[in-house]
Image (cartoon, one colour):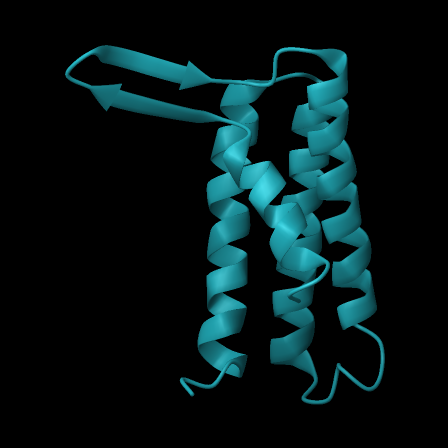
Length: 113
């Protein structure tokens, strides 16, 4: 998680933002083909990692784990497609869905230690 999913999720989540300050509104969007490509690559990497989460020995408790991994795959694939289409609004939306998929898994499988 720390070496593959987290840094790539950060790329997807950090690609699109709107910050409102007293100085005005700062909109962040990928601006170049290279920036869009970086987001697409990050989302594709997350998709592949989701597939790996479905393999033994990680997939040990059946349906709940598999549903969580599939949600990660589905949302990161949607993020990849949004990056391919250079659709910042869709990327922002699916980024939230991907965050929810991650959070659901973390709530079920990560200890509070």
